[in-house]
Structures are given as structure tokens and as C-alpha cells.
Length: 244
Image (cartoon, rainbow, N blue to C red; front, side, top):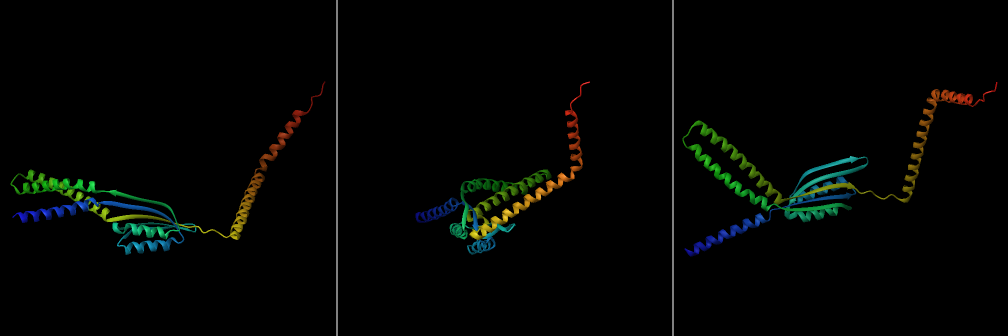
């Protein structure tokens, strides 16, 4: 008898330790990386392929084009046990890392807070089911049915929250932003670029000057007669008055 009690206590203790370990391991991990790469599309394909090899999945992937430059945005999820290895590989894909942030949040307390609520709602659901089996008025039955629907709805929400916490603890999220690494131009190309920019600035100045001259000519029909009138009046005002 004592042997059975000891065996039963040992099993109960082992199960309790397993549950406590699983709950204490409820840690949500995420990371953000901004990388400069030589080829955005090729790097994106490598990221997606590696995530799949590590039993992960791609949540979002997009490439935008701004002029001649390409920019990429990718969000992947990988199992927590593969998080560090995956993050290290992604860093090696970049020619330069311009931003890096890793966050870790323990959701054990939030997860444990759901258990008492879940237990209470299960008990309330059981009582309502017993109440509906008893004989009573139609209004009592309708009231019990309404309360049962409410309790079931709250139960679904809590179960969904539990599943969400479990997924966060199992899968880590990595958000990557990719940009193009500009290649330095040779000295000859830099001189040509300077001359091209100088010529473009000169043409812009000449274009603005031509617009100004054209505006002056157009408005000449107004300001030329006005100028002659002003000069004529100044000449008359300055003319000396003769003594009688």
C-alpha cells in the first residue's frame, strides 16, 4: 500500500515538474534586422529557403522599386530552438547591418492567469447545463440558454488566447528589411559624374535665364511706356521756372 502511494506521488511530482518546466519556458522571442545587400531578390530567396529548411514559414514578403534601387521587407517565423542559428545566418547574408534589435518576453504569467478563468467558466458551464435539464419555465430556460452562449463565447476567447501564447512560445519572429549596398565608383566614373552634374546645372541655369528674359520681353509692353512716362515727368519737374 505504501509502495503504491509512493509510486503515485512520484508520478504526480514528475507530471507537475514537466508542466512547470513547460510553463516557465513560455518565452516570446522576436528580432528586427536591417541589412544592406548586393542583390535584394537573391537574398530574399535565400531567407525564405533557409526558413523553410528550419521548419519555419514566411509570414510576409514584399519588394519595392524606387528608381534603380530595390528594397525588400520579409517576416519569417522559425521554431524557438532554431532562432539563434537562423538569426546568425541572416546576419551573414548582409554586406552591412544598419540596425539590429532582439526582444524576449516571458508570457508565463499571462498564460497562468488564464487557467483560473478557464476553470471558473467550465464550472459555470456545467452548472448551466444541469439547470437546463431541470424542469422550469420557458423564461428560465431561455435565460439559461443565453448565459450558456455567453459562457461558451468567453471559453472560446480564453482557449484562443492560450493557443496564441503557445504559438508565441514555440515560434520566434524575425523581421528583415533589405536595402541595396551602393558600390563605389572608379575615379574616372566619379569625374564623369561630376562633369555631367555640372553640365546639367549649367543647362538648368540657362533655362531659367531664358525664361526670365522671355518674361521681361513679354511685360515690356507695360513697363517700357511706364518707364518713358516716369522719365518725362522727372524731366518736367526738374525744369527751372523763369522769373517774370
